[in-house]
Image (cartoon, rainbow, N blue to C red):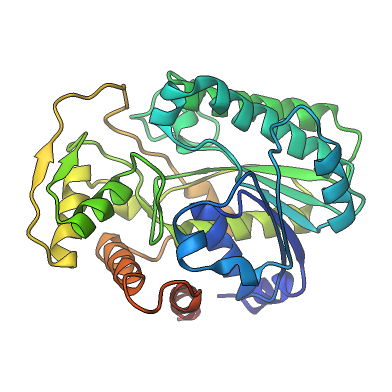
Length: 353
């Protein structure tokens, strides 16, 4: 890992929306290892890594408010008071099935929330960089090797809301008179790691099954996704933010682990069960209520060529890291950030080497 990367982040002031979520929590832990001043904004405290690792102590401040609310006075004042260098926008409704169940909340959370944070950051005198997380599911033809210029299109409420966010970002950049602010978009693959507790996700459901010693009901055994270890993804976000800040350039990047995107959900499930050391069975769910695509892959050559980003964890390493994290948090180590920070430092050591 480059020394200038470490030097860049040293003493930066950063705001993370959705800091209590899965990726927001891991980003916070990663930044804390780089000596960053971290401020969190979320609608609520979340189950999972945020609570299980009790990471409240790593934040310089955390505020709980709904940024998708029509009243933005509190958000605007908060961003103005903190006056961060960089903002990461992770606060969103991030689940495909939840999008079908609660379309209105998905639309407000993803579209209005994104506009509100753009507006608040745009009025901040010091902020140069806003990085917005959308999704790999914005592409119209999901089974193609989609690049950043491929056609967008959403067939479900979740993906449609994220396509709308992407269009909104373009409109905001084109109309903004604040030339000091650059906004970059990240379309990341299916991110997996320890402490994910979002409903109807593969690893979350697997963890629940092994902890209860119940057979695992698998929705789509042959589904292929761009699986990606959470810290590989977070490192990509940090490189994108650095590139945005240094070059004052709005951009779009895919983040996808090419070495891992050939594996099915069933393969990952079997690998997890074997690594955990349990004898629960996998049972295929034949009553799928909601439509999800069978194959989803994206091309991240741009991130590799322009940022030097490549994922360093393969599927066996990723699964082992998840099993290690989950088992550690079944013991006395739970309720501290110790093990999570160890995994971040192990990842940083691997980057160095």
